[in-house]
Length: 290
Image 1 (spheres, rainbow, N blue to C red):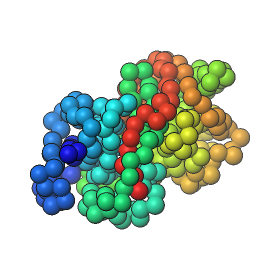
Image 2 (image 1 turned 180 degrees about the horizontal axis):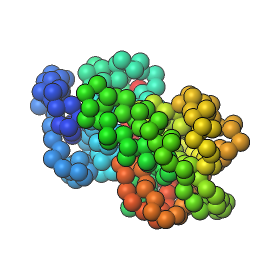
Image 3 (image 1 turned 30 degrees about the vertical axis):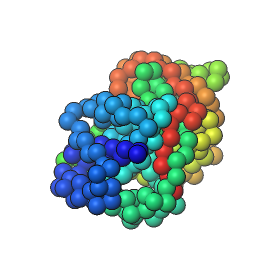
Image 4 (image 1 turned 45 degrees about the horizontal axis):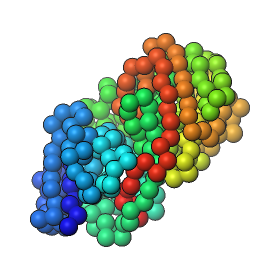
């Protein structure tokens, strides 16, 4: 009998933890194994303990990233029960489910309609990602969003508020990169390497990206003035920015970039770096999806 392993991040919804446990018990009974994460990286370790199981990531994009990192190229399947503030990857994966139903309860109610599906994921050095890897402006936004996350009423708006905070304080980075061997060297506002469409709480940064095409969508955005960037921000939010002259879009399997004092953003988690190579892993993970 296939096990159903639920990895819960208590920090993602402390007040709802008991409700989640009750919903899981009602749905799966003795088939369910519930594990709580205790520290950064714990979800990855837990996921690696199981074989031929469905492993459920109950939390936000950070929890999803940790769980999937323990499931790459295994016989386990990942199912995401979104419970974070952003929940960006499921905007792509669960696009046919209404937003109001993309909750722990909503997905559990529909889980009988889900089927296994192979999708791609990415590798950045010795780390994995499902959604997006990036460097530049948005990494600074993620860092700055932390100043709003613990303020009452502002958590869900933290990324949007941080965008406006960062626009007038960040002026780009000198970046060298190779996209499938094609070299670029310029002052860049952002390099985004996408497997899926959304990040930052609903910013449609990669409208053309597909999770099962064996390719990454690389977007290289030149450094522009704060006011110019502010004027095109609505296009960026809506995913209509790809035709702008200062935006380069390339389909790729391998991207290398380097620069001084960079911060790499992997599914919302930040890592310091000066150089990294990012590659696609075709069919690297099995997910349950509608």
